[in-house]
Length: 377
Image 1: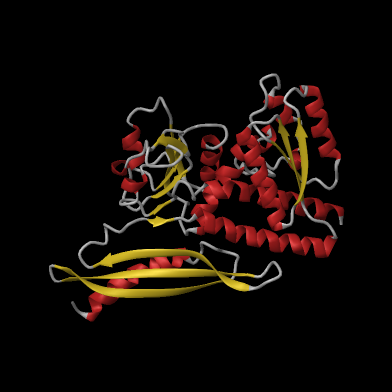
Image 2: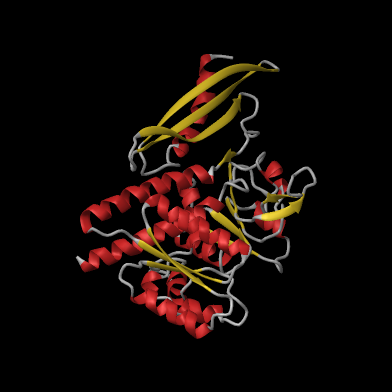
C-alpha cells in the first residue's frame, strides 16, 4: 500500500477530529492523537486511532487538565463503511457545560454581588421525585447556584400550592421555579404550572414559552430542558442540522413535540413517527438525525438506521436481567448494540441524554438570572 493511500485513510479521520474538538465548545481544551498501524489481511492495512481530549478546569480553587472524553476509531483501506459509531458521552459534555456555568456564576457574583437562584417545589414523599430533586439541589451547589427548597405535604391543597408559587414569583432572589412532577391527583398540574411566572419558567413548559417555540420568528424565554439537551449534544458533537432530514420517534409534550419544534427552528426537515404511523422503519431509515423518545425498549433496530446517521436516544427503560443484582438493567429506545454498528454518532443509555437534562435546567436558571441582572442594573 502506497503512501498516498495511507494518507488518504488518515485524512478521513481528520473529520472525526474536527467534530470531536467541538464537544467541549467554550471550554479550553487540548487533544492528543495516537495511532497504531496494523495488517488486516487481503493486502490491506488499517489504523487504530484514539483521540484523548482534556478540558482545563479553572473555576474552583484548583486548576488542572482533566479528562473530558475519548474517541476511538478503526479505519481500514478495505471498508470505511463499517466504522463503529462515535459514542457521545453525555456525562463529559454535561460536565464541560457545568464548568462554563460555574465560571459565569462566579463572574455574576463579582459583578453584581448576586448569584442565580433556583426554587424547587416538591409535594409528597415519592422516592423517585425525592431522588430527582436531590440531584437538582446537589447540581445547584456544584455550580454555585442558590437553591430554595420548598417541601410540601402530600395533602397540601391546590390553593396553598399556588400561593407558594406566587410567593416565589415575587421573590427577587429566585430566577427559576421548578415544580417537581407528578403532583398528587387532587391537584391540577396544568393550573399550577400556568401560575409560574413566564420569566422564571426554567422548565420551559409555560404555554407562552411553548407557543413561541412553535412560531417562526419568535423565541421563547426558556426551552424545555431535555429537548434542549438533545440539540446541545448534536451541536457539541459537530453534527450539522440545517437542511438535514430529522425523524422524532414519539410525540410527548415533554420531549417529542418540543424537540421537533427545535429541530424545525434549526432548519431541519422534520417528521414525527408515533403509534399510528404506518411503516415507521421506512421513515426512520431516511433520517440523517434520529431522536428516539417513544418509551419503548430497543424499538429502533440497526436495520432501521441510515449509515452515518446521528442517533439521540432519550428513552430510559428497565428490562429484566437476572445477571444484575437489581434484577434489571436500563436500556434506551434504540438497540444500542445493533445501531452502533451503523450510525455515525449515538448516545448511550445510561450516560447520554440523562446527564444533560439537569445541566440544561442550570443553564436556563443562569440565563434567567442574567436577564434579570441586566434589567436591574
